[in-house]
Length: 197
Image: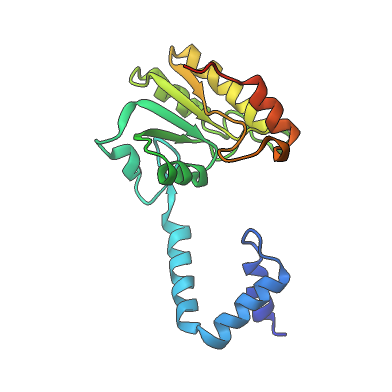
């Protein structure tokens, strides 16, 4: 196998869920049947890597200094939802009617991985909270050990700025049956139960 072909296969392996065999199939497909779209992919990928940065306000991916969500006048500026990644922001946008603003951490507190408050942009978040416009901060971190530690830190940050912190509900999924729910999820749901109106 040529060095360039080997390099192409190795480059494709950087994608999540793509191992050696999948990368080889992709490379062979592009070279055998779809060179035109392969060239288009290379062009768009090159441009995206050069031109997409992070919004200076929310840290989401953006081609402009301030993203479209942050600059939109139709978003509720009194509510801020904090998520771990742009993927989660997209999921919330697609699945809910949420019309507030966002802040993307680009990770979660994990000292072992070198991710502390500075790496998550919490100084920028503190500045936004201190502007006085935000009344509620929705903490939408994942229910992992690191996500929970991050949520606790974020709640303290919000309270210090006199902003009401709220947390997404976690527990038994809609349509789920208790006998199939894992122990940790069931314990969390049981401990977070709410009164019925």
